[in-house]
Length: 179
Image (cartoon, rainbow, N blue to C red; front, side, top):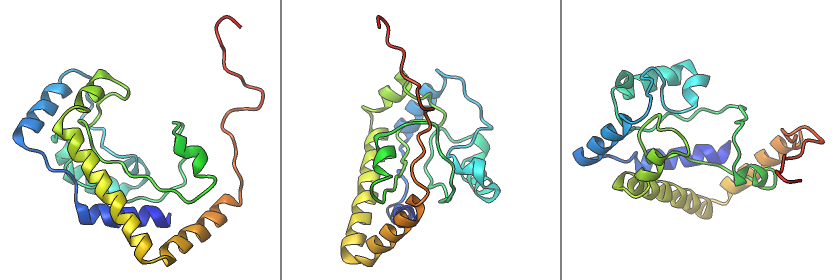
């Protein structure tokens, strides 16, 4: 995806958040509150590309880092996540891209008190500021070179030709208690 590549270049330019001793100590203590599997590497790209997996394994120090302070190499794939975000529907209407920047320790359980507790720390602040810089840099690049947007639009039209396939089977409705 052209926009993803552009975001990745901006991410490399901005750099990953770096953490001080107190942030690493907080992340270490938090990590002690949940099951942690050191063999699991951060980033979905590690499951999709053996070269990326090898690079991340080195950067992650074979599971000895408490929190990521590096950028995972960009991987292009057609994997469709079973998760849901509001950008999922939008991505069928216009070119989109996403970025993930660390805001809590690796393997912190999703939608957990551990994630929430990080949200009020400098760990999350650094992640959010980094993401904002990457998004802003990407927008500036597009404003300065409109051909980047044209390439993204052309790619979008090509990718959208297959049409949208709803992952929810037809006729399935939510179970609502009391109805």
